[in-house]
Image 1 (cartoon, rainbow, N blue to C red):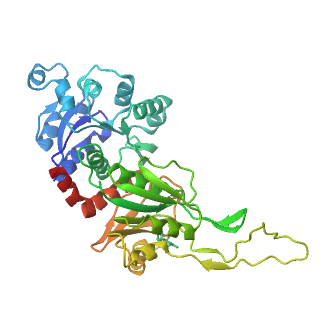
Image 2 (cartoon, helix red, strand yellow):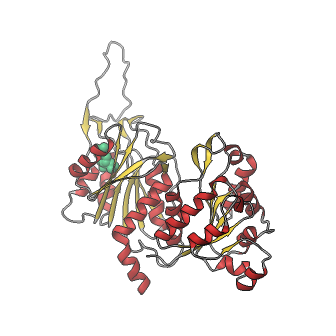
Image 3 (cartoon, helix red, strand yellow):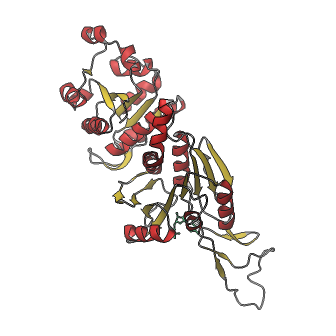
Length: 410
Ligand code: C5P
């Protein structure tokens, strides 16, 4: 159990009631919440219910003689591990971005020396408004983490981005921030090997077979694990996204190059096979550009050869098999049944199963199920960063926890 605590600033929006669920979820995870409720926030939740759930006094006023005598706003802003604003309204984002300090919440945000996490929730037009987007960008440039809101039907009847993310997703993010930003990191000393992106299988010097993988999910996982202290080797096919901080990139094109790069990067404690590896390659890759339309010739037939299965190869290694091997299973139907069968066939320990019948490949969101020896865990639809953080938390539980407590004891 963690002995961490957050300072939770509850803003005035319809999503404020979910902050009560958040307090409970965090307390289940051993994280204490001390709360500030803004004046508008008190229209949606009462300080009494907040203090009953958090088990702590709830703060509301900047100029309260009682509060200032017990604990001033400066001390309040610093005697915590993380400041979380949830829901972060358009007004709170604007105040924080502009450096205003005219109430307890904004003053605390100005005075704190701790990391700040903002969880926005507002009407879709307010979220998309140029002023809000400008404020979010300013805050991110200032080092504040601003989560992206979920998309969907809103309390006001409109549809689009602006919904508060799922409480579990927010709790995951908070847990991630708490372990990433303080003390010994739970994956320090661990080496994680990850494949990501597509592979390209050349037909000739100018043509290739490939797929739509963007690399986003694999890169997000690599970044989340690096933030937790792991040494991350990211073996990637060609993609157009930046390498996450702290990851060592090995760029490859073909499946065979990818396998070779992975074998060279072993030993590793964890192997995660996120890449969309092309199952086949052209049997012959011409050294000169093929002429498909030569006069009098019929269309050529494309013969294929099977590519090595990187995940199965690493899973079945006798020597240097990583302690935890995780595969991905992209399916369009009977997702979980296929994933369980695939886990057995490939010899890996866990499978992250996802339904790619929608716009997952290249899209920002992913709805997955984690299949382990203990069963199937269905996760809600979330963005790929949230999937990455939740998977990273599971990996820490599996292989990082013992070492983290050892590190803490040293
Ligand atoms: O069989 P399927 O392609 O659905 O398996 C998906 C999993 O296997 C993914 O983890 C993918 O990275 C991995 N894979 C691989 N080498 C291949 C094909 C798939 O490592 N040739």
